[in-house]
Image (cartoon, rainbow, N blue to C red; front, top):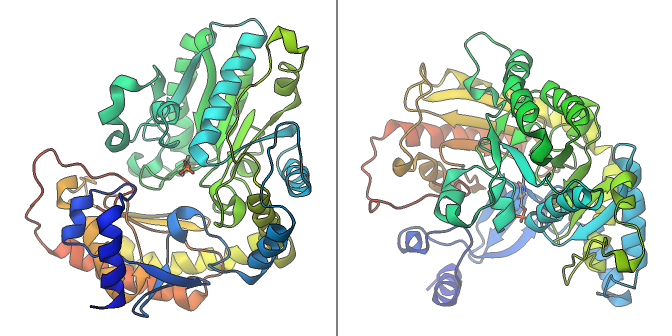
Length: 468
Ligand SMILES: *Cc1c(COP(=O)(O)O)cnc(C)c1O
């Protein structure tokens, strides 16, 4: 038995994997990873895979990055963890100072959670609680965009709209208001991104006009709807939204959990719209992809509405055990150092241009509806019919074919449905980008050439995070 098989069998005897129909692993080998280095992951049999999805969008400076490793090693000998209520520590103070300084002016307070979904819960609860504290208890609903994704906990699912994630749990969800997304994939022929995103804002304007008295906040994934298939829109939408939220007295929550830290081409997506949200949710790349940590930044206005004598019961009594963990903060500080010292955002422009040129030919593929890009995120959408942009039936799992081909070739490409995308660590080289483009092209050829017989039992579901 190979070492891979050995670990796979031990794993499958005891683990229940995230976002996975475990029965798939009767056919689809699990890949046990022994070590990582830079963009590479290496399995127990010595085969290497280029991590094109940054291990679920978290890694930015490669696996086993020496600078982040060292910072964590130093920290673990000092202090591994301490309660953050009543106590504090240097890494969390330093990190908070730096986040306040690097985000848009006015985001002056940092509240920590230990994963992205919890961070969304924090923002939703804070917004609702703010309106309660200022005597507007009617403002308790949230406006969300169609095709959005904000995490897996119940309230985070409520403001999400990727039906494969949420349909099953509908009975548990909050009652939210859903507005059509400015997603430019379905823009009319010949229309630009800006014009389309601007036109789609009419739906939001109407919803706010109608419901603002009962609405606490609008929540959006700025510029890229990630789990919804890397769908993209123009920053003008965020500018119009900020202006309307001000006009109607509604908070704006930016979920930059996936897009923060350089993914869209600027450090934060909100910079491209020149706006400041009322809540900015950060996680994923915050620690360079090392450790779970999330930060919810907000304004002094919101902070002050909670600041009062204890007996008024206005405090935000929310906590997670690992809030502000020192090791995670140390990893985050090392990550921010690399951004600062290495001119990463500027250097990424070259890499983004290479991603574009290496995949440009795919736009002519008979089963590719679109190759789209925002900064360091590039997506290729496979369709059954190019002219009408008709999707493949999800049961055919075309993306899975690309995933399997890429594994053979030594790349980790994990499509979202029929959307093949690159979201690589920023330490990728131009040559490695060319390699990924080659693997993706081959995979797309294979996946779209075959007529697929659907072997899945009826009612089987494929999650969007699934390679299906
Ligand atoms: C991943 C993600 C989340 C959830 O973060 P977790 O750490 O996985 O809970 C929320 N919002 C967006 C936009 C994400 O991509």
